[in-house]
Length: 423
Ligand code: HAM
Image (tube, rainbow, N blue to C red; front, side, top):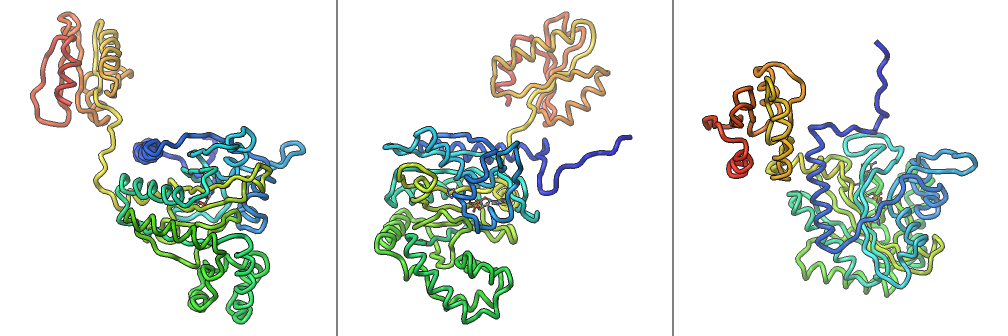
């Protein structure tokens, strides 16, 4: 036998038994986004490398270590590690952002060369939202309300908490950065080599260090919130007041800075303790300078993205009450002269009459016994049986596969109605 070829590490297949739950989660995401009037956009999976370097920042982990980059003749391309950069690129390119508000969403695969573990993959899927042209905090609040609604729909609301912070203007962050570096220099012996490097390039990321001793010391570090400019402070106060008014609980986490460089003002994450180390199911914030930084007219932006693998895992972990649709409702069993044609004809008629119904025809021959085995395995509620005598009499035998109801023989033209009434 030829040697088999396996999937790339950290890049998963979605099996036929897993896909119904994925479809259910994706369906909830879509319907909540539609509830709020957001429009879907689809961007390419590959973009030119400088887009990500400029948008996300050269010194971030994503750009410096995790991108899948390759040369296409003389152009350097990258598999998108996230959706914001591509969405902003498209918004500028097609003029979606000029003198108009846009509330957009997207869903699809992203790629990061990270060390795979539960909840962290090299190909993963995000559903993301980007809103352009609305500077005031009402929209930040709306995004958070929208996610909270989605968590309720998914049955995970009790298992996630909202972490919130404001990282202010670029200038405020620079002032803070100096204060933080001065503080950390007094504790330099606690920093790992990687953190020492960060101290020079991206010191704010040290705030979410996994080192417990350092974390305790950081509790006494200067707080970003104390360095905020007046405008960001007011923006954050209004956001908090709105969340209070609609009853969404949050924890202000002064150490929350997020791993991508484009943010300013609001940043937030929804986290869970039910998934181990990879507990952030959704993260986002404001990026008012990004459109301009990528060559567009100054336009504010705010958005978030959620990791669909993590949401699916969390739903599996905590929500035992989902009623996933079945793959098959009706299984067609047939044998003998004229039976194949009659079965195909009836199956098509049922699909037209009852568009929600899932009808599977057997298609692989064999005797009734073998066909009934398959029908049972399919999980169908009904087997519709057509043999020679049924063909002659224009009838069908209806067998209930899941409960103890006696089988019925009905004229073919009454089958649709029977199924509708008994489903
Ligand atoms: P991010 O925090 O890098 O933000 O990713 C958002 C979410 O994607 C994470 O909270 C996590 O659920 C999921 N995620 C990230 N990396 C992985 C991975 N390797 N495996 C599985 N899931 C993962 C962004 O990507 C920003 N673009 C969000 C945003 C949109 N901010 C403003 N607009």
